[in-house]
Image (cartoon, rainbow, N blue to C red; front, side, top):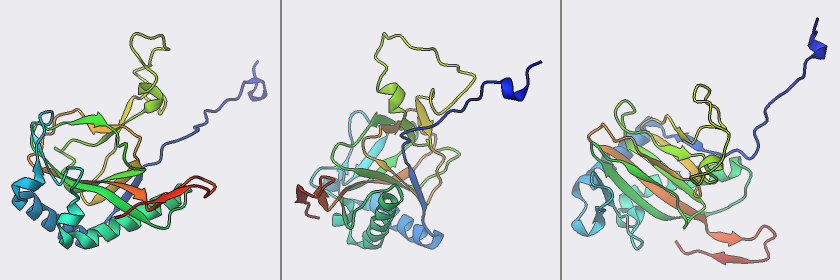
Length: 230
């Protein structure tokens, strides 16, 4: 008869995980920021608005390389300060060092019913983020993140071990949706592909997206560096 000592023991170890930071603003602050951003989304002038052919149901404010929502709308200075604090907190929590960052891009997304967000990543930053300004998780599409350990290696046709679709794990799932709520800010490292392909069911999904860099970029030994201007 087989005893416990006769059995082969095992465990699965996760290595090189991908850190997502989820930060929740105090409700009083969020409601102030929400009111301000909804006013901006409604009244922004034509030269600050963008609509792209591949996003029929989404409009953006300050989504050009020479624009930044925080530069165009100084009334969002407190939100910018909060996001700066959050980014530095995230960098510290995941074990890196940065004394000062700049938000090199920031824009507002207004997504109507049937909107999707094509999968993409950001090549011009180290840390990216999304603030859920007007968001109902019951009807608005959740932001998803691709598992690049799978999607980055699978070119079709290719040989691979088939997925067990009855057993979802961190290792066989190509995309994870993050269950976020209005008033929360999610951060991720900018190389991570994100988006949503399930059409939005809500009428007015509003988020504020941003990209950031350390103000002083160096190699790990501080031998080479350059400084960015805000």
